[in-house]
Image 1 (tube, rainbow, N blue to C red):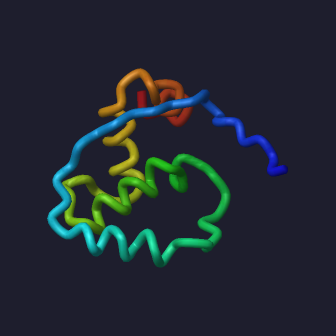
Image 2: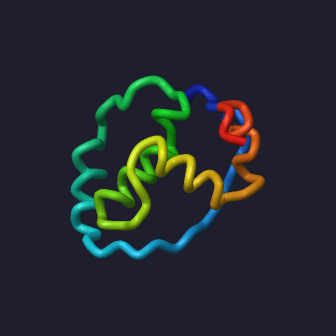
Length: 90
């Protein structure tokens, strides 16, 4: 059985809708990263930066990387306030 992974700031779930003019490019990025270690977690390398990178690859107006992650976290509101506060973005 695998190890239990605990979210450092609690569980967060959020649903958003984004225009994605080139979904195949987003899918291509996801497939390139399958099975690849993306490094250790921090806010610069998190599920939010990954989502921002995928959205950006697909042509969304969401910027990739850290600035996109911060924007997504701000859109999520209170679900990510602890993360933003811990890293000095709130």
